[in-house]
Length: 604
Image (tube, rainbow, N blue to C red):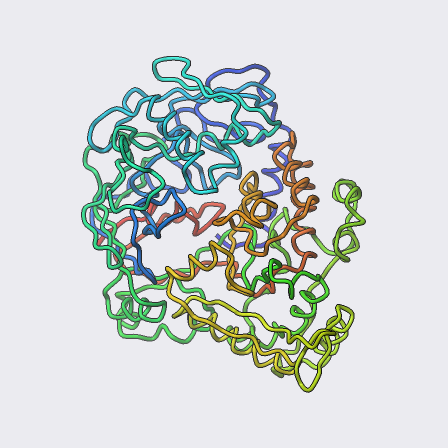
């Protein structure tokens, strides 16, 4: 499926349908739940529209990952757990369709029930739901999992748990959550928490990292692992949910394996040598030039481009405003001016990739060009005095020069901004009025070759301003530790964003993240306006109000000048073994968690 006008048309038609769809008058059990209107699929749907219900079972898929892991608990801040552990082995009450924004369908729960105001939500478990050891999933397991994650788990669980006024068992297989906040998304979010087996954790400290395999109810179990080297998942032949409509055509491989390598370059080399069977390429230039190895020529490896209709998200160099040198928006704008994107894009991508214009660009949720109008302007108006220039009037990134590394025009603008902020070049070094040099550290993950190339070009440009940052490359474990504790001046930052943003935005941009470790607020922003827009998003009763609040948030984030954005791609580039196949029908989100390996299969 090709992105562009058709994709946008389909999305706008879907939005219109959502706006016109009636909301339920009273509470009654349902097979799914949507933020607005009703789920697209009926209770008796055969399979997800992007799954192949006739896909054969068998074979295996092997992924290569850079870095390593030292924990098998992905639900806490401590330690580094392998990708896929929670995804393949643990389930939630409801499950997300990656073809519908803001829609969930019953998984462990056979039904969901809520009132018109979404002040509470009740789930009823399927009687056949089982953990991998054959024991039933009970209400007691659900309640223990929610409380434990909400109090001892990763910070991403705590914000929502704080909005639960009461959790109560309402029947043999049912549990109800009553909320203390006006937040319509909560009814959905309470269906998305991982359900763990309570008995496994009795007498153990959940908050401590360990290598004990969690007992889940998912389609796979951990077959074997070696910390830092590999982990293998085996399809459970007794999986309780194999015949659910939601799962039909999914979870087709007998074995899923993740092998770990020192860095991204070694991971790619392992793929070219046939040690792994699928590789996701992030470089358009490399995609065009580096895939000429023998397996490509023989047809053993094929290249696929998977389109999507999701927002660009944000990728680039984030500036940590906890560091005083980045506290002033004028300094951050100067750092953006000094980054000649057009030259960087030409050098690395042959100029092929579009620049990220805002956090939700490439989607109906993006802020758009020019000044704010209508509901967006109304939402921002109460905060106008405290918002950086450009938030309401409109903000656009500078145009660079693809033909030369140093764009003199932009550097002159940067110099003027530095001077306004109290920084001048003295004896060839950028200093403040006290003579203190403008210094900071850029922290990168070792082996990220493309990122290092971007930073090398940028550092050379900064020298023209009398700025010479320290660049430090650390391994994956150290990078996680440094970024979890915000111990950096700049770092490479990627935050994928969906068409259904909600409470998680508070984890990304909320003021609590200024001091609380482990949030996604790497920039250290503290913006009452941003928090107000998030509250407006989750409290919206219609799509029009939701879109306006998201566009307003997008303006606050973008004009805040926290990240020096680079590029995004309208397609995912996947090279894979020719025996691996995926359905012709690509979901709205494209290559997104829930697509590979879930919808793929092995066939000769």
